[in-house]
Length: 123
Image 1 (cartoon, rainbow, N blue to C red):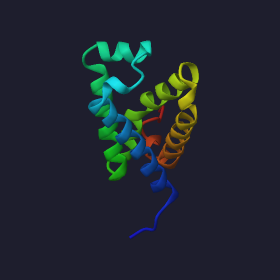
Image 2: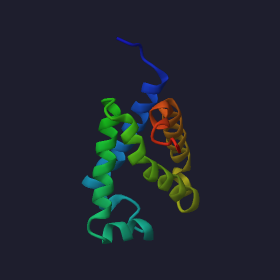
Image 3: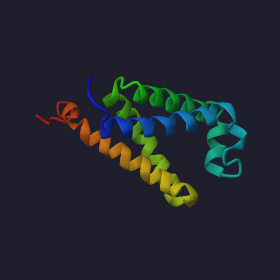
């Protein structure tokens, strides 16, 4: 039984962010940035916003349960980058959380980097 680690704390923080944000997309989508063109466009597709919510909740649960973490981080990479870019360029109010999320994501990728080494081997 290992002790409580910083890596696990980061996983919990990321998990909570994704479970809460993803659930909000599924439960109360009309209350999230309704006036924003990007969010409205994702909702207008009829599937993308829901798919994003399901992906975030699933990834958050995987992080919370420490299951398939390297795969979860790969799936979350484009989502985290887009969350950061969205808040950097369109909605500055959420930028502190986006920076926290990006930092947490990068730190977990670094922590699990030995797992990715074989995939990234160019030989």
